[in-house]
Amino acid sequence: MLSKFYGIYFISAMRRTRRWVFVAAMVGISWACHLVFALTPDWVGLACFFVNGFMLGFLWGVVFSYVEGRRTTDLTGSVMAVSFIFAGGFSRSVGKWLMVEYGVAEKWMPFWTGAVFALPLALFLYLMEQIPPPDAADEAERTRRVPMAATDRRALMQSLGIGIGLVTVTYVFLTVLRDIRDNYMANMWAELGYAGNYAIFTRTESITSVLVLAMMASLVLVRRNLLALRLVHYAIMAGFAIGGGASILFLAGRLDGALWMQLTGLGLYMAYIPFNSIFFERLIATFRMAANVGFLIYLTDAFGYLGSVSLMVAKETLRLGIDWSTYYAWGVSAFALVGLVAMWSSWAWFSARHRRLSAGT
Image (cartoon, rainbow, N blue to C red):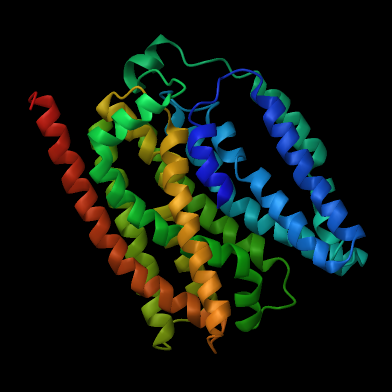
C-alpha cells in the first residue's frame, strides 16, 4: 500500500532510461527477503515481507512504461495484465509442487520458488530493454507519453478529477476482492475440498487467463479511442454482473464451489484487468493529456490497497466467525452492485466531459 502512494510521484516522474536497473534491484531485494525469512526466526518474517511487498509494488509501473502509448498497447498490455491471473495460479502450483514432490520446507518454499524463475526473468528483462520507443504513428494516435511534474498531475486532476474519483471508488472494491482472492485462494480451495490438489490453481486460472485475454486484446482492433473507452466501461460492468450473479447463486446453494471460483475469477478479472492495461491508456489518448499511465494506475492503486488493507484488518480484529469462501462470496455480491453503479456514472461523466471539451466549453 505504501509503495503505491509513493509510486504516485515516483512512477509518474520516472525517466525512460536505465529502467532495467530498477527492475533488477527491486526483484533482487525482494528475493533476498525470502532468503532472510528462511534463515531467521519467525518474527523477522514481518519485516522481510514488508520490504518484499514494498519493492514489488513499483514493478508494474516500471514494466508498463515499456509498452504504453502504442497502437498495440491494448494487446501487449492485456497480455501483461493477464499474467496477474496465470502467474498467480502457476507460481502457487510450483510452490506446492516443490513442497509435495521435493519436501521443501514451508519457510524455504518462497525462496526456491523464486529460484525457479530467476533465469527466465533475466532473459526477458534483457529482451524488454530491446523494445524500441513508440514511433510517430503511435504518438499521433495515442499521444506522446511524458514524465509528469507536479503541475502536470494537478492539471490532469483539475480536468478529469470527478471521473477519476468515480473510477477510484470502483477500483477500491476491485482491489479488495482481488487481494482477498489472491492472498487467500489456497484457503478457499481447501474449504471447498481441494486442499491436496496443487494443479487446481493453474487449471482454473489458465482458463480465466485465456478468456479475459481474448476479450481485452480484441480492443486493439478499435481505433477510435472514445469508442474503446466506452467498451471498456461495458466490459467492467459485465465482469461485476458475472461475479455478483455467481456469488449470489453460490450462497443460495445453487452453484458448485469450483464453478463459483471459476466464474467469480472470470468476472473479477474482466473488471480488474482493464484498469491495469487499457482503461487509462485509452483515457489519456481520448483526452489528449500530457501524462502517462503510471500516474493514474498508482493513484487508483493507492486507494485500492488502502481499502484492501482496511478490510483485512477489520476481519482479523473483529474476529468474524466465518470462513474465507463465505466472506468472499458476500463481498463480491455487495461490491458488484456498487461497481455497476459507479462505472455507469463514470461513463456518463467522461462522455459528457468529452462533448464539452470538443465543443470548446
